[in-house]
Amino acid sequence: MSKPVWIAGIARGHNAGVCLLKDGEVVFAMEEERLTRRKYDGAPFATMVKILEYTDKLDYLIVAHTQSLESSAGRLDFCGEDPYTGLARKLGLIQRDHNSQAEPHPQVIDLSHIHHKLHAACSFYRSGFDSAVALVVDGAGTFLDFRVNEEGMTCWETESIFDCDYPNTFKTLYKHVGVRGPLQGQKLLNFSSEMFDEPADDTHILHISENAGITKAYEAVTEYCGFQFIEAGKTMGLFPYGKENPKCPRIFREDTIYPIVDRQVIIPDYPNGAHVNHNMFDELLKGDARRSEDNDITEYQNRRDFAYSIQTQTQDEVVKLIKESVKLSGKKKVVISGGYGLNCVANYHYLEALKNEDIEIYVEPVSNDAGTAMGAALLWHRKLTGDTTIHPQVETLYEGPEYHYSDKEITEIVKRYDAEIKTATIDDVVKLLTDKKIVTLFQGRSENGPRALGNRTIMYDPSDPDGKEHVNAVKHREYFRPFAGTILEEDVHEWFDLRGMDSSPTMMYAVNCQPGIAEKIPAIIHVDGTCRIQTVTEKQNPHYYNIIKAFKEKTGISIIFNTSFNLAGEPLVETLDDAVRTLANSDMEYLFIPEYNKLVTVSNY
Image (cartoon, rainbow, N blue to C red; front, side):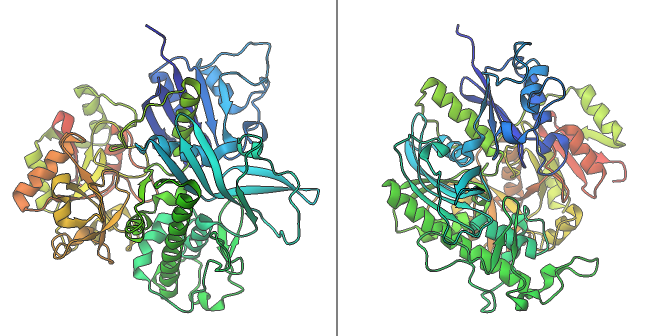
C-alpha cells in the first residue's frame, strides 16, 4: 500500500484558515476564528496545530495570501524562518536541515502571488463542471509590483476572469488591478505574463486604474452606513429598506466596457477599504455618520437609499462581467468566487438576469479568503498528480473537524456553566419550538464557511410574527438583519421560486416566496419578500431533516427558522464548550445534542 500524500493549504490574512487534504480528499477545512473566537482572525496558527490530530507529517504546506512570505511574514528570532514554516517545523509537520537556517524549504510552497487563481481553483474544483470560466470579484488580491515611469507602484487585483480546465489550467483572460493613483499619462514598463504565473508568450486583457473595483465600492458604502468595511453582509441586509433616489450619484462610470467606479464618488484606500467622497456629495451627509447611543444612522433614509444603490448597481455590473466571461472564453459554465460571491441577493439576481442566456453558474459557498486555503491545496494536488477526477458539485459543507464526546465529558462541560442536562427526543424539541422557545442545535462536524447549515444552528418557529425582533434582540443584532430558513428539499418549490434551480443546499441565494407564503412564516421573510434558504435531505443531514419533518407533521410548515449559533460580533460556535458557554451567556433557552439525545438548559430556566 502506497503512503498517503498529505497537503495542507493555509490562508494567512483575514478569514485565515486551513484546508487539509489526504490524497486529494478534504480531511478538514475551517477558519481560524472558530478556534480563537476572534472574528475574521488572521495568521492560522491554531488551525495549523489542529493538523496534528490527523497526521504528524505533511508532504506539502501550501501558502495562500496576497503578499509573499518573503516580503510580508517577518522572521522568527534566531532561526530566521517565516512564522508558518517555523511553526510547521516546530510541530514536526515538516523537517529542515539544521544547517539550512532560513533557506526556503522544499515542502513549503508559496502561492501568494496568484491570490485570484486560488479563489478560482476553489470554485472550479468544487463546481462539478468539466470545464468552465471563473469570475473572481474581490476586494484587493495579490500585491503586484509594477514599474510606472521608472517608479515602483503597487497594484491590487480587483476582478479577474480565468479559463479553467483539468487538471490545473487557469489561463487569465482579463484582470482589473487598482492603484492608489493617479495614473494619467503614465507608462507601464514591466508588465509580463510571468507576473501572473502565465506562460511567457501568453497575453490577456489588463486594465490598471486608480479607481475602486466592485467590492471596494461596496466596502465604501458599508463604511458610510456605519459598519466596518468588512461587514458587507450588513449593507446587504439594509438595502431593501432603501429605494431609488435621484440624489444618490451614479457609482459606476458609463464610458468603459468593464466595470470602473467613478473616483469622484468612491475613493479606494488600497489594500484596505474605501471611502465615499463626502466632499463631492454634501447631500449624502444628512445625518451625522458618527455613531452614538441615541443615533443609529441606519435609520436615515439616505443611508438606506445608498445601500440600495450599491447593491443594485454592483449586481448589474457583475452580470456584465459574467456575460463578458462567456464571450472571452466561449464557455457557458461560469464559476463565481471572491468576497462578492457571498452576496446572496446578487446571486439570485443573476438567475433572473441570465435566464435567456443559456448560462449555468456555480457560486462557491466559501468565497471569502478562507477559500483560498482550499484552492491552494486542491490546485497543488492536481498539479502534483495530474488528477483529472471531476467530483460532484458541493452539496454539504460539514468539513470542520470531527468531535466525539463521552457522557462524562458532556456532563463536565454542562456543569462548568451551571447548566442542566436531560434526555430528550426530536418530539420534545418540536414541542419547545411550537411553544415559541429558542432551541440551539450542536452536532457533528462544523460548517466550513460563514453559513450555519444545521450543525451549529439556532432554531425557532418561523410562524411567530414577532420572531425576527425577538431573536435579533437575543443575538444583539441590528433590527434590519434578516434570518434564514431550512426547508425540506422535496417541498421547496411549493414555498419558494428557485428560478430554475433544483435546490439550494449551501444557502447562497435569497429567494422570492411563492404567493401566500410570506404570511405563514413572517419571522424569516425579509422586507422585500425574500428568504435566504437552505434545502436539506435526509441523506445530507438526517437529524436536522427529521426535526424539520416532525415540525411539519405538527404544524404543516416545511421550514424551520435557522440562524447562526453565535452572538453578534462573535464567530459561530465550534466546540461543545463554545455552545454551552454561549447558551449560558445569553437569553437563549435550550441546546439540543441529537447524537446523544441530550437537552441542555441553563439553571435559570
